[in-house]
Amino acid sequence: MFDIHTHSYCSDGADSPCEVAEKARAAGLSLFALTDHDTVLGIPEAQKRAAELNLPIITGCEIEADYEDTLHILALGLDIENPDFTALMEKKLRLRDERNERLTERLIELKMDVSSALESSRGATTRANYADALVKLGYAESTADAFDRILGRGKPGYIRQNHPSPEEVIGTVEAAGGICVIAHPMKMKLDPAKLISDMKRLGIRGVEAFYGTATEGETRLFATLAGQNGLFVTCGSDSHGSRRPRTHIGKGWQDCEELRKTERMLMGLAR
Image 1 (spheres, rainbow, N blue to C red):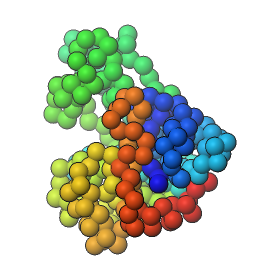
Image 2 (cartoon, rainbow, N blue to C red):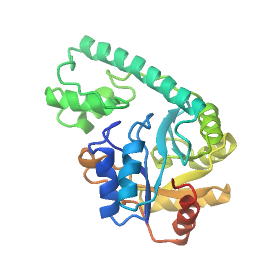
Image 3 (spheres, rainbow, N blue to C red):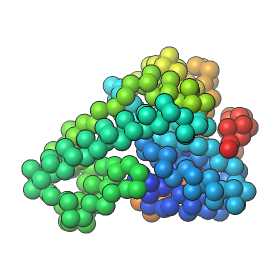
Image 4 (tube, helix red, strand yellow):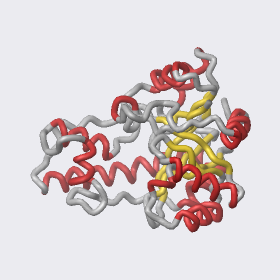
């Protein structure tokens, strides 16, 4: 049983990297990965606690790349100290900081100055941090409401962030000894068959077909498309701790041969 899509407070999760490792052990996982958005700041802490718990861990990061719809790539099993990967993380942080500066200005224009309530993450500050601030100041009823009315694509507070190309992300991760998996493809509003075919062409190695909030139909569809394209399937909860209480670590796992095969392969990436 594994979960290779989790978040800590180094991006937009609620728990420390240590707590993520502890919850992974408590959930009965045999393997997990910490995949914060555009940062690997929490990896050393998670690795240390995982070693104390005798729990295999894979290095990881969730990286957004430029594409016709929001494309999140899980980078797994890579050398996080690789110079080219470090440069990519610095570039991503710079682009995120630029977006956040513009987002702050936009919210001020909308008479929703959140500066007094905005709590920056220890690694990458995301729109979830802004959603929390909007809720705290009474501009939104919940984080979901904040995205639905203010921060989401096409909404008044949406600011597009620039991203590196998928080729740059995938090439850098592979050069650092890692592999790339497309995260939650069922959330993308594109033709599924074309999407997976494009991802294979770009160098993606796996598909997160078993996802914490995926329906049975979505899981079967993307598992089938992965098999047709020679890609392996993975399992991830996308856990954010108390920020998403219904998506707990381990959610999404199914005891099936497809995932057992992937688990055996992933064990070779554990550090």
